[in-house]
Length: 222
Image (cartoon, rainbow, N blue to C red):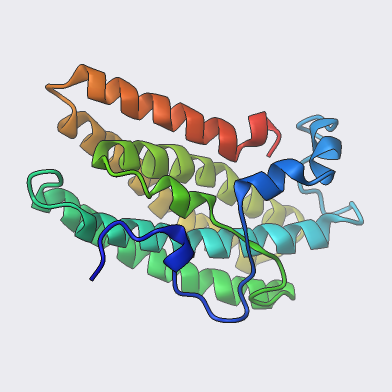
């Protein structure tokens, strides 16, 4: 099997339409997003746009979980035991199990909310962050940055479920949220262990994390 699989070679069927981070920056709708305040950008059930925004966000969570599964799986395979100790690979295998559950839950939630696979595009930024060849940078970019941002997304959907009187959405998001906290902790623990004797490597990884965080959040407006 090929190591360090590029994003273009990810297996998808005809339902998936991909987009990249450049597409997001060139989308004229982002100008309107940047004019909002944080409070007005929240998902609020009384807004006419809330159902569509919630379905779009749910689809984004779904494809993000697929890529998180792929990223953790690649980490178990891409590196030899010198670069990634067996215990790290075991943690990534456990994360694969979590992410596979999240994919299944997200598919069911999408159906529950009235959407289907492929109704929205698949942004591939999460997996692109997992294409770096240093496991420390990969953990910083994926587990610490993107999984950390996912906590905010799950909290948003959980709050929306509560506010809209949807106990299924609230329960499922709360269930997945607990796993995301564990994934961030695993990333932090292993980043520290992999770089404990190499502060320069740690700083490079943290700089990559900051770059991923800034790009994914579109400067803080997503």
